[in-house]
Image 1 (spheres, one colour):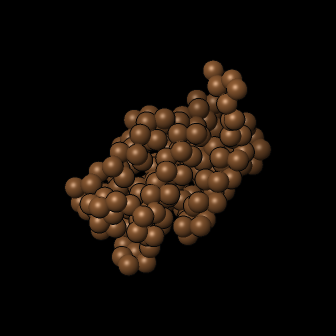
Image 2 (spheres, rainbow, N blue to C red):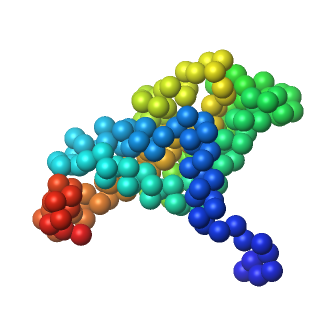
Length: 184
């Protein structure tokens, strides 16, 4: 496998991912609020805390971590003017035909299946919550990659909850039951 190579521990990558989000003004609760809005119509008793837990779980996945770290790095490099032309101008202006930002985010979404993919498309088009704030911060930082990456995390966390909902239904439970200690 990777014998003899210096492997970066999962805890280090997870911490770096969360630090990158915080550094860029994104809190886990901001993402969890989007997840809550997406899932509460289908899940009686769903709490924001359960959505936070789902976001935290998604942020432990390497695919999402790597995508976030790469995307944030590219946004920050663009802010410092460190990308070569014409890429610098394309990223700086978040050019409409530049789809690499969505491609990186979508690649991470595939880990969570078709529900996550369609939810990502919805979030990319409708730009709700913190996603909209990042997308419309013209002149206040460059978030060409980050808005799509946050949509990716929210879509994955919502997908986790959708699948968990089915498991609970099959067991005759709801998220409220789990919160009250009735189920696993």
